[in-house]
Length: 304
Image (cartoon, rainbow, N blue to C red; front, side, top):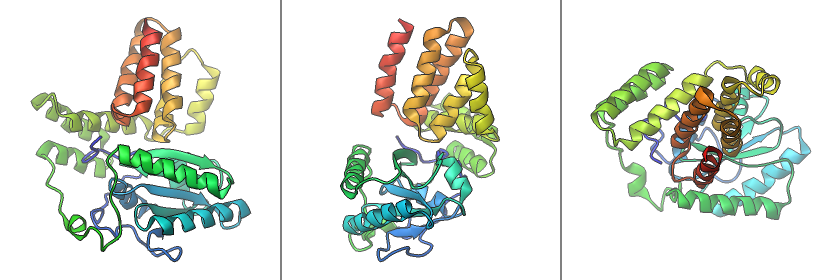
């Protein structure tokens, strides 16, 4: 899924002007490797952009937690071994609550990867070193399947590091500029005009789905949304709102299951609204994602 010009799912909207450089987002090394960085709300969007080049492993931690420190040590050692094929982003959960909220981290340690701007939940809590390594190895397979096979090693791909991206099409640039301003309605309007000109524009379709999603979740109180959904299980609006939050937090399968279950027990307008929302979220996640393929089969069973 090509995410150029589309909003990322981190919900942190500052533009990464230096994202095309291998050193983008490196505030200061957190360990012996230049690929271990301390991250703030301001630098995190740059790292999300870098996730199109290498997987970014986000370690939400607290130095006051012994379990968190143990996980951090394992992740730092593994990052050194990967030698630029992953970037380890260290996030202080207490100091950077907006990043924690965007990734829906409930405690420490919580480890989430970002691949091509999409969150990939890995694990929570203390795990044996071998099991953490297995998660990272599996992450590399997911990244490779999505075409993320680059490196941050300055000496290995200097030409790729210096390459400039071609400019966005005018309407895509207009949408991107609107996203920078937090104006999701204007961004959506630009993507709709792009689709009117070229109905097969997959980037515009994906961008439209994403900015509409971000517009829906903007300003929501997550606790209140989930409380309402629990109190009103028959409300399609309440259930779809939770599904939106789950998608932005990387809980893709939970979101899909919630909507499929809603479709299975609904009828009429509610059922059609849920079906359309699910198809839109397929575009957000990426139509080639195996979770989408699985959910399509579940949708077919629910409908027929």
